[in-house]
Amino acid sequence: MPASNSGKVRIIGGCWKRTNIPVLNADGLRPTGDRQRETLFNWLTFLLGGFEGRSALDMFGGSGALSFEFLSRGGSRAVLCETNRRAAQFIEQTAEKLNAEGLTVIVGNSLTDVRITDSAPYDLVFIDPPFAAELQLKALKRCAPMLASDGLVYVESPLEISNEMLASLSLSAVRRLKTGASYMLLAQKTENPS
Image (cartoon, rainbow, N blue to C red; front, side, top):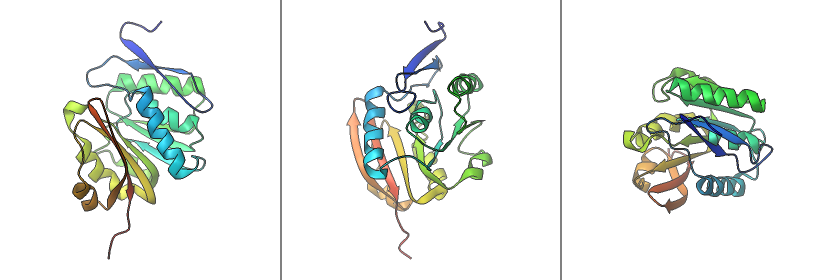
């Protein structure tokens, strides 16, 4: 039974399948739901074939669910950035419990922290900030230069992100889905036409 100041979310696939992750009960911390994660990782598995040898950046770590799901399914390394120190402690405790050696937790702001560039380029970037903060476009602009040549970026947003905005960042949508109050977007880096 989680403490009153926390909840839990469950890893849905891979070697840590059915493992509960504790989630800090904090304003704006809203883990990606099971169905959305399942949809996202089905998309990624179809497009990538697998996660072995791949790297990910989780710009708004929150519960760590997206990073743990990625590593559980064979991802090699994930860099997770989280501004809330207590939430980061929850993630670090889970990583220790799971012996998740491929996870690096940075307590900081992914929009400004230079440490996230140290491990670039990334094959995959997760962008799921607190919706009220409206940081999706800033995060896309920040991460686009850090994507590998065929890198993918996942964005969860309360508003749909236009193809024009993606094109301005040399990205193109490969999957879109509206689920409840959220828009799910998976975009891929495209070659600059120069």
